Image (cartoon, rainbow, N blue to C red):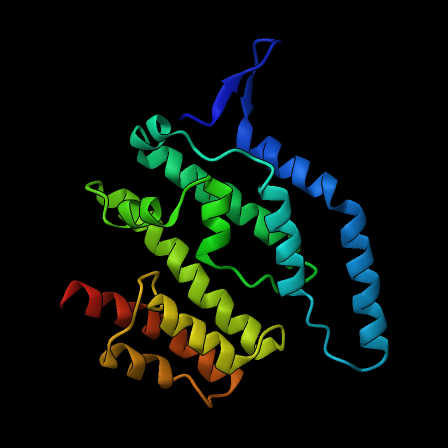
Length: 211
């Protein structure tokens, strides 16, 4: 795994775990400010919509880390891509204890240090296990988008528009058939939306594969 290095003391260091610790430490003061704002809004019986704003703070922190070198991208294997996904998920999960972070592939690309074309290459990689990791990333994007929409962190119609623009599963555009899959979730109750989410993700994947 290429994210593990040997420290000066001879012990292995997980670079991504170290990165997460650095980000959490750097955002400690900002997090406290957001929590105070959230509590104030709740006291006023207002819905605190802070997840999107806090995601921008995470993006600013990630911008301080370098892009992945071309030679490192070429050498990516399943274990490394999966490790990026797991550590990225841990970081998002940490902040989802406080806010509904509206996950999207842009923040994952920033976390990995790759661009759109490289992201698409991973989606279509010869290694099916790497493809499966990217499907999980795209599934998280769709899932957290709906959760944020129905919880009030993001507007449901705006979320639906973003899903259409991204193809729902990380692609550039949706077809009419895919639009119908997404539209089935509009106007539903939160529980109905949650039940239909898996069907939406699975349905779009089948349409993309031509099944």
